[in-house]
Image (cartoon, rainbow, N blue to C red; front, side):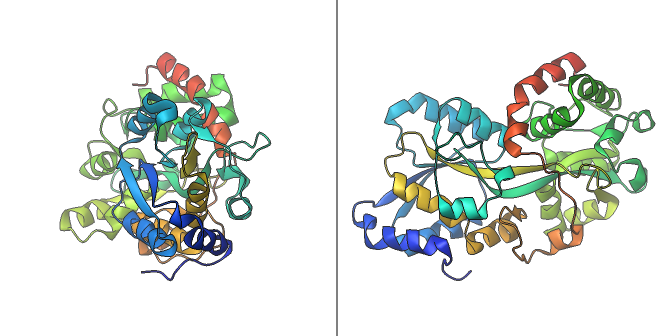
Length: 345
């Protein structure tokens, strides 16, 4: 287990531990993160502050639906979601509140936060994941899939598979493309992907990777941590999958690879606001950021931290796009209209 918390977060946690902890016995967390390694994060926070973390686990949509149905009576203090589009949607729906924090301002890049309306951002990215392309090494050359544009290239007809176009991971990627290309070119690109599909969209990202390995399709999109999980697996069937596929960070000669986030926010009606802010600051500490990287194969949101993850190391460094993630989230409504026009299910 990593060392106890340090840096600017220490002061906030100490203040809670020796002051507010007497009044705050627990913190209510609504989380769409379902990763076993996150348990250590919550245990360390409790150890430092004496505040127990009481969790409600569900997927993003269910978390947001619960917040909406509970309204001002919601006991939620902190909300963790795993996609920029969903974070933006929750902000628009008035489910978060702004946070002004010197520790978060210092550690979380402005491109990985919600927009600051004057009182602070309403959400903060806490870890990142890349939207990469995987390909069947026996059937495709790496140079034929080294850009997102290649997914729509006629030379790849009948080779592409994806999960639903309306899934948040794809909505965020497509939102980034929309910001760069404009509506007409993005629609044409989406139509090209549909024309190149080996089968209708279905399943999750791991399913796409396995479909590429089996030859059901030859090219697919996936979030990087799904591939990293397979790379770190000791199961023979997972190792066999990894041996058959290659991966590429798209657009390294251009705008860079699309990066999405998992992020957190203070709930609009949080009964324990001070503890909620301290919890977000804790998640931006070196030790917590290391858990994100080494436990769930995500890159830290905080720049410059060293990680010890053999799969991420094997993937190597890459150029990431620099679009503000909040702008990407804002484009999801337009993207859905384009998906409908393109016939992308």
